[in-house]
Length: 187
Image 1 (tube, helix red, strand yellow):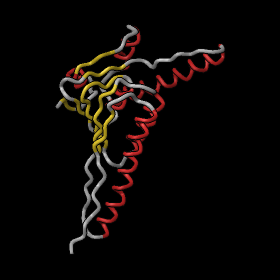
Image 2 (cartoon, rainbow, N blue to C red):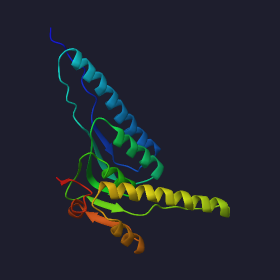
Image 3 (cartoon, rainbow, N blue to C red):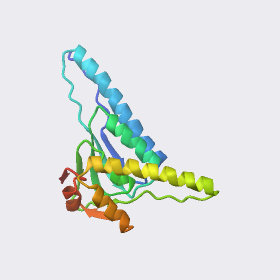
Image 4 (cartoon, rainbow, N blue to C red):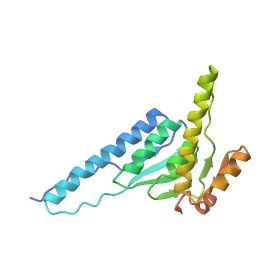
């Protein structure tokens, strides 16, 4: 009787909503479980003389963005994943959705996709010292986002500075996203 290896976990994930604790928790949990499952299947395959080649994880994205802290948590999980995580933008990847889209090991989008980058939003309220600390934290988050964007795309610091000086959201078509290295391929 032939050995039956376990069926690998489903690798198609979706972010078609706001980036928040619930949506990011679901994606994070799935990526971690797929990685753990692949380690088990790989060891089992090795013991029985088989080679196991796991398929990449695919995250389909259609999101207007959301909360930065949750987004940064997911980016860390994607970067640490031993299983490649590919991102595919089906509709829009805006704000935090943009950051997740550029984080894929391979990055794709459909030709009708729209991307949007902008500065971190903040709504500091309260006592002056509290607001000053909120501004410091917002600047720290902005630096993380800028560094990530500059390292994962062909967007330059000069491009970002222009966006900030014009105080605007920077929208890109799929072709513009390809030109700026936001995606690797338009499908």
